[in-house]
Image 1 (cartoon, rainbow, N blue to C red):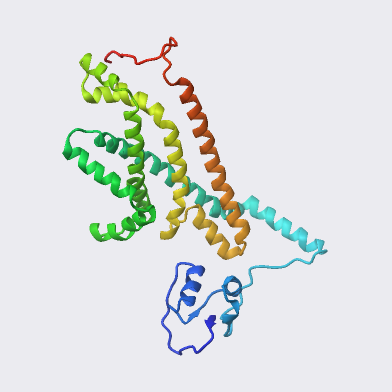
Image 2 (cartoon, rainbow, N blue to C red):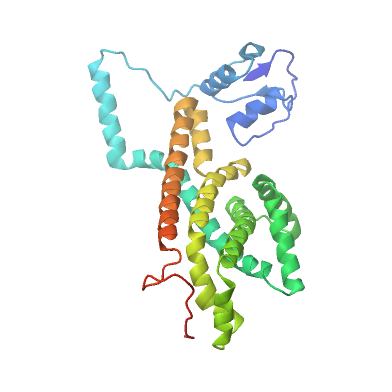
Length: 322
């Protein structure tokens, strides 16, 4: 049991924390009088504390449950035993179960990112078209929505849906669903501006050409404008998707066990902060570099294709109704 230097009351109220780091943080902030966990955790938390000398480990151990060992440098018999045991772990599948503890978080991160991208883009198309509407009852709410969410930090939006939504609907949403709704609602505002900019990049003559052959507004948008605007949207869309991949790490704050959260949990057990967080940085760097490279190539292809008709002539083209 780790305690701040001072007295311990005989009658105690037990307070549970989500993990070791938050438990020790509660002790340093004076929320609890003592913090109690495995000996290795106590030594690790004390070592990482800003003022290690302010904390002492006291009291008898409740139980002795060794779960680690040190091998002599030249003891080949023990080394062979450990190697054989590791082979057993791999063949039995237990090693991959431990491996999934970390990589499972990466899978959850990709799942969160993909659902947020698809949902945010679909909602963003609706909002982007609404922002271009000449009807005020459509334009004004869409504009207010976009400006509101673009003015707020994503972290605050996550807290909104995690803490306030259950109060409104009368039941908890769950960590993953809360984060998904928050991400879709937030990212849709940014996708809406990309969609609006892409549509406005198409010459007005395309709309007039569509009206001249008897097409309606939704037909012009679907068959003429959006198909061309999407080509202009692709580079900023890819960039926004890269940003979403980075933003998924914010789900950490509500306890969702995505990639960064799994790294943190592993660090609490292994006390290898530098290596683990460097590994996390390299993973995010690889994802973002891939997205940046893809965006750059798409931008080059768009600039080469822009304004070129199949016959090599520049200008707008009139299409017939499907």
